[in-house]
Image 1 (spheres, rainbow, N blue to C red):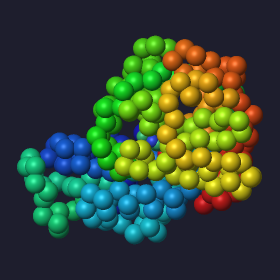
Image 2 (cartoon, rainbow, N blue to C red; image 1 turned 180 degrees about the horizontal axis):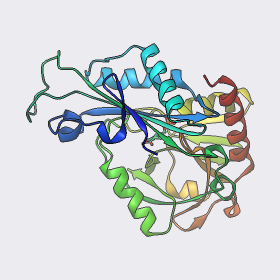
Image 3 (cartoon, rainbow, N blue to C red; image 1 turned 90 degrees about the horizontal axis):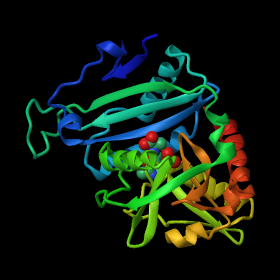
Amino acid sequence: MSRTVYLNGEYLPEEEAKVSIFDRGFVMADAVYEVVSVLDGKLIDFDGHQARLKRSLAELEIGNPLADEDYLTMFRELVSRNEITDGMIYLQVTRGNPGDRDFTYPPEDTPQTVVAFTQSKPGLADSPAAKTGWTVITVPDERWGRRDIKTTQLLYPSMAKMASKAKGANDAWLVEDGKVTEGTSNNAYIIKDGIIITRELSHDILHGITRAAVLRFAKEAQMKVEERAFTVAEAQAADEAFVTSASAFVMPVVEIDGVKVGGGKPGNVASRLREIYLDEMRKAAI
Ligand code: PDD
């Protein structure tokens, strides 16, 4: 069945949704995006994703074409029209179509391009991988310097994902100056002696919406959190490791560059955090 997708105010069959070859999103990756998960037909942490969308747009001086309520209505409409129970909504806003290729930004009144579509993932929260955990490799972080902006420049993360696949792993952790920045599309954590350690927020990593919620729940549960960078060796010697993202939620990591972490099984803390995160976020879903 063809999906109904959203393009600039219209709901269209996916085959009919067309964007110009001159769109800045296409020729310059001049675009930002968000991925919002859907569980039981409801949106997980819509407000968090909206806040980051607005921040990404503002950092790049791209106008925001819609109000929060319009995004909410559109997301719900897509979920309903595509009968999504569990899955994701992908939203992209580009600087629009200047009608030609040019390095300078187009005039401010150039309308932004807004695209959104759903991805159906039945049983998203019951992923079997959460019970066995992910294996990761490490690769140098060769992305640009503003990773806090959620742009569609995803070629390097995509290359890193392919490198992990070639080695039979689930993902890659990116390493800069000897320290882990984050995963290809998730934030990275280790646990040592009961302390949850994850890199502090800066321009070096994406400010994960799942990260914010998980750290909040961890603190509420009296767990200790240390926001600082860690090395690969420290991660390999940790008691547990895990990653977070809107689509993987809290995913245990059980092997880093062939070295088993925590005996090669998902740890108690990561598994508990996953449970708390899913319970709380389902309750707050809209
Ligand atoms: N990726 N770091 C990077 C580089 C990411 O691309 C993502 C999300 C995260 C986690 O952010 P959040 O918790 O807000 O999803 C961290 C999305 C899921 C994606 O590109 O599909």
